[in-house]
Length: 130
Image (cartoon, rainbow, N blue to C red):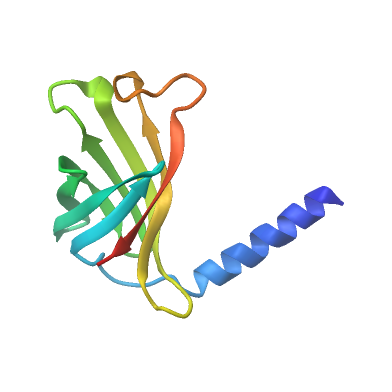
């Protein structure tokens, strides 16, 4: 019974989100990001041929955005010379019901240089377009 409930809830959530999925390029500009409770700016400065660049929390990012699936993936270089501080973000673009606001949401993976541990190295993030 519990498995059926989880499957039903998952289906409903996916149906709601899929009705608000967008087609086309990712909006460039400044987003307000919250990653694991840490707030700051996500700035997407360029988007060309599926590649994107910008900054997150003032650190350089580079990655990809798939216009068909609205999937974003980027790497944040917290300390450019120390790969153990890099973070890998993955998420999806959609619009909220009611306010019609752009939202990115997903998870990010961190490594030991950014205080991650073997038991806590994946956490959530979201960003709203400003």
